[in-house]
Length: 476
Length: 160
Image (cartoon, rainbow over all chains, first blue to last red; front, side, top):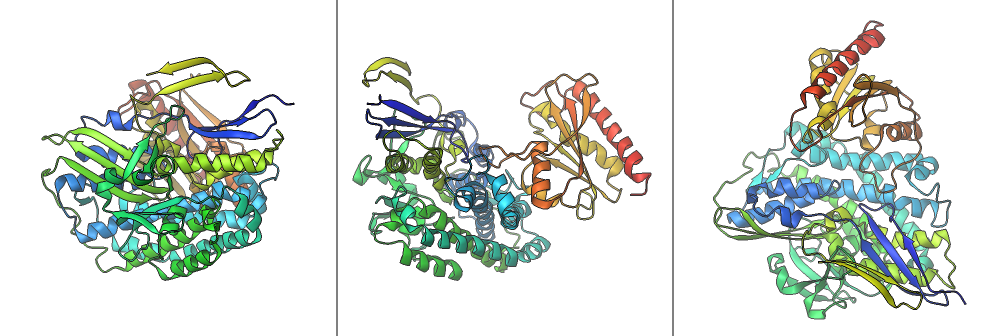
């Protein structure tokens, strides 16, 4: 009989940041349990203390190189709340547009470069070629289109904030610059090609799901709660909206103003991860875990706000039922529907008569000692919550990012995939790739998700073959 | 910057100007803009880092000169080296590229193999802050001068 053993995947590849998966096998080689460890460590919540709150949109966007716009916008919204102002309409349109650029570039990057090697080349293909270079070799035209679509999203960001990454744009009370008409006209010319590429991606993933239903059904499929920001019609709203939590049957469990998130969301801490585990308080931990991001949003929604995406959403709903809506692989499908939605939304914004308006910022002195800013980042709900003193200096920061919201779900998915594909201790490379792939579906940004410093426990435990604790190293 | 759409020669300086001498690349580009910006066919750009989207924009490049800071001690304080394509990307994402990876992307995506140089310039102070150290500034200005000479010799004098 085989001895109990442990499998470690470190680092998890094709995700943003550094994580580790540990799988425990029992004596017969079956999976006993699995954990997804976030091993990197940041310090944003602590080192922002004492800074003037106006600096927060600039400081916090440096948390991430993929979704800096999301952090900047959530931060600016929290600062608006501290100022107690309603920003000018043009500023709101421009922030929304910048956000659409962010979604377009981020979703394109994930689908065409991080996820596509598994989908296009196959889970069990040669690991040496199962990467973006392999995709370029086998599907060069698709790879070129993907890179151009990402660039299109980045160009939108650049037109507003002066550069593609870490733009200086959203500020407390509005935005820094108006949109130039020539930039608007130039970018409008790019939509035809962008739609074409997004549709290619959407058609591909829809076809892939239909052809691989057996795998889709057995790949970390489980009933969960879902969460997203919704407009008044129940459609995902990436910039603003009510915080909705839906159950596994998609029925709404709670819908509330995002500034009240503390009444509904708790944060559990496990000693083996730097990443906290947010949960829906009414259901407790871990049953109150929920999924955010494309799958969470679309499973909590009643439709999409734009026509092409809504049509794609209806097709998705026809397919994703009888439990299939809980398949983790459906993240890829829903991500492509959102990509289409964000392109449509961006085009609407570009054509809005107010988009090139000049009234873009309102200035005021702080009128509140607390502000909460919540938006949808590409990976899911992003919460920035600040408390300031009477001088506007930051006293306390709480950040809950998408990959944190998905922490319970990522761990559950890893365990389910491991149990499905690893038996009798036989661990083939393709199986391990599926375990990584389960995490990759969530497109986690581990750089974003680990931002706390000081009180996070670090615990190292060493067990013998009988699972008895031999040594424990603890740092308080 | 100069007309990028028609440029056959690109000079890209990259690095983080908020980490002192890591900003050597952007500093060199700023210096070069005085001497070369009016030259047609030469595009100058300062970047934080190289990223994959850049490959799409460099399809028309025949010569590519990258300028980056290095912590390695160099005999002359700077070093010119030809860049060979590498067909491997970082497994951890698509945030940034090494020059060899950028060359690899150009080759695999667009079948382009521009003559590619990396000019490494030795930095001394990579701490937080803006502005180069005096030592790095001297080396960066020498690198700028060599790049101007290179362009004059290789392209402008030959009527490119």
